[in-house]
Image (cartoon, rainbow, N blue to C red; front, top):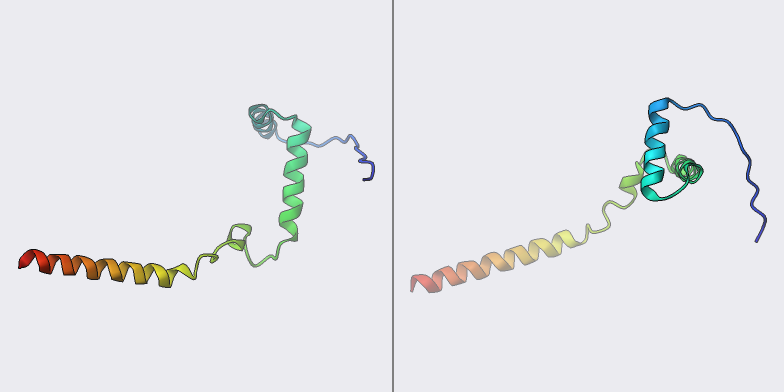
Length: 90
């Protein structure tokens, strides 16, 4: 595996944003540099996604095939309750 090169740089951020970042890094038990690196990597990954579809929608629709099965199960339950109700009336 190759060598990882690291560089130091200066970035200007709002005071409030820096305070929140420090608090989150501390809460997660990681360095501020690690938090910035993770955030930047995530942002760059998100930029590579197709513009028309938000990241959270990438996974949506995966259970679409269960709609039919769910409807079938609900129908069967309803039929059974109707049968039980008819038995109770007798």
